[in-house]
Structures are given as C-alpha cells and as structure tokens.
Length: 343
Image (cartoon, rainbow, N blue to C red; front, side, top):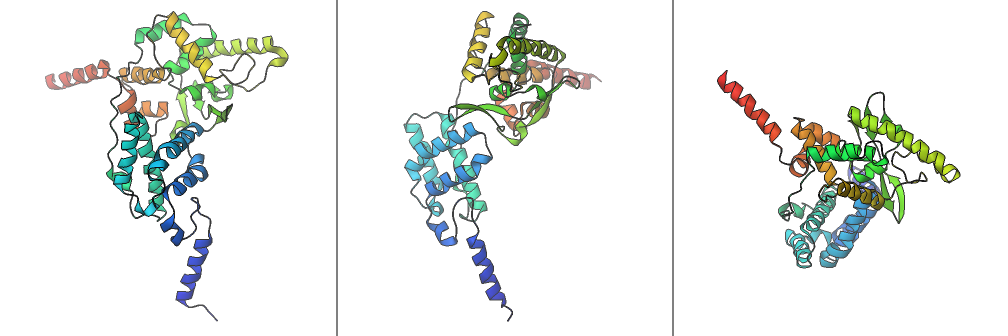
C-alpha cells in the first residue's frame, strides 16, 4: 500500500534526524538543550579545524576553553543573547586580556553562531548586535625605502639576502616563507607560488595548509629578487654537499643546515641581527610584510592588487591594516587634479 503524504513526510524527517551532524547534535530536541560549550568545542574540532590554519585553531580553542566557556558555556545554545557575548568580552577586559584577544573571541563566537543559525539551531546570531572591541594599538612603522636598500645591499650574496627579498618585497608571512619549496619558484616566468606554510604542530615542525583560501596565490618577483634566489640556490647546494649524509632533502628554499625545516625563532633572530647590523630600529618580522605593502602602494599599485599579492581575504583588510601613510599616490592624484583643472 502506498504511503500517505503525511507518512512520507514523517519518514523523511526521521531519516534526516538520523543523519550525523558536524556539531554532534542529532535532533531537534537535543538542539534545544545543547549547551554553548558542547556546540562550540564540537564545531571547532570536527568542522572548523579543517578550514583554518592549525595555529589559528589552537588559538580559537584556547579562547573557547579559557575565556568563553567558563563564562557562558553552560547556557543552552538557544538562550544565548547579546548580553552574554558582552559578558565574555567584559570578563576578558577585566582580566587584562588585550583588545586583539577580545576581538578574536567575538569573531570566534560570530562564526560559530552563524553556523548554528545556518543549521537552524538558533533563529538569529546574537553576536551581530555586539560592537567590536576597540583596539588602540600603536602605529606601525614600516621600514623606509632607504632602510630596505641598506638591508638588501649589505647582505647581498649571503644566505639572508633571498630571505630579505621574500620578506620585504614579496611580503610573505614567516610560515609561508619557511614552507617555500624550490618547486614553487618558476625562474622562467619570474613567479613564486604560495601553497603551504611551516607550522609547529604538537611540538613538531610540519608543512600545513594556508591561513585562508586567498592565501594560496602566485606572486610576480622582481628581477633582483630572482637573482638573489639564484645565488641562494647555489648556496643551498653547497650546504647540501657540506652536510653530506646528514642532509635530509625536503626541497625547502630556506632550510636548516641539514635540510630540515628552519625553526621560526632561528629565522626571527637572524632578522633581528640583520636590523641591528644595518643600524635599523627594532621591528617585528611581520613588519616586513607591512613594508612590502607600503612600498607597492607608494609606487601606485592598487589596493586590490596588493591584497592579492599578500593573500588577504579582502582588500579592506589591506587598506586598514597594511598600507600606511605614503605621500606619493596622493601627490600623483594632486598632479592629475591640477592638470584636469588647467586643461
């Protein structure tokens, strides 16, 4: 006998409820009772972990475990309000957590609860009604053109030369640079492909996926950078011969003396030493990335092009965080305006 329409709907609903969910929530009844902490950790470990960099996942999980869940983790998912989100941020502020950490906690909750909304677990995302915590950080000072020239000329022909080119002109993140392989560099077309990064996972250095989808990109290199990489390639060959049997081939552009991945702290110490020897004020290695963006902008390169070169998820991030005061584009704009008025 054929099933009635009502029976068909009932059977279809039962099948859907038996399907495994990414959050571990299996039916409508459990959805209404599940606590935020249960949903958040399950979603982080089973779903979001595979969509973000390992270091980002670790950071988010720490925020969930140490700041979010202790405050509002026991509250049922459906009962979370903007007031609860504000409570988390206020508690972090009282604990003297940085504005950046407060922003990250809000961002984590925003993405997680947006997923909960998409899944039908909640009717709306309460985070949308909570303001982003202000971050009055110090103004970042990228290196000047003169400082960049001094660094590149001082270390020309050394192991550090190519590394400085990749940092100051190509703008790669540290993990991206240390995860760079020779197969990723096309000397014929003059391009560099960014497809992976080096990260420490459970205490072990490993090559992993990139931070975001747009982080995977191809960059055009300057002729000077290509020449520095060719010299660097010969230096790596000499290192390989010198190490003999102790060499472990990983095809890395910036390996340790035995071919193994280079630790981030070693890389950072070399950067600090280079600045010190050239009489350049202390900067974070990440400031080299700001420098690359600012240099491109000063030469009239558009924000969207810079954004793609740096692998940002949007050009708004590039404009807000990475392009610092540069008068050249403004002067060029003023000259064009003057020509237009006088014509």
